[in-house]
Length: 125
Image (tube, rainbow, N blue to C red; front, side, top):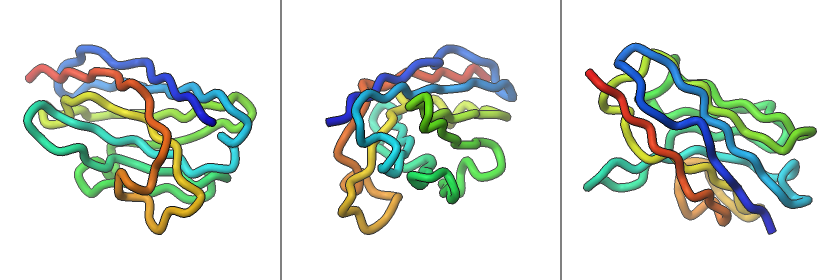
């Protein structure tokens, strides 16, 4: 069992930065891939970024590549999403997710079986 709690959301001006954190509890955190997804009102949930269990590989949606950075600290059971050069279209609820051992990719919600409650990011233009 893994429990995930996100923090760090808030209101920022376009061009600004935010750092989202996901604190995980549970013994299996360090052996799972972790991901960030987001969902804006009226839109489907979309993949943002993912990181392998070791932190050796990272994956990003094209829309955030070069602006967002995902990282993890397995000693502290945390995953972080550093978001720079934020745009109004980045506004959404952001969710941390724990990957399934049986997943076949990193990009689909169905590849993850633990989810946090979400943290809201608002970007003003």
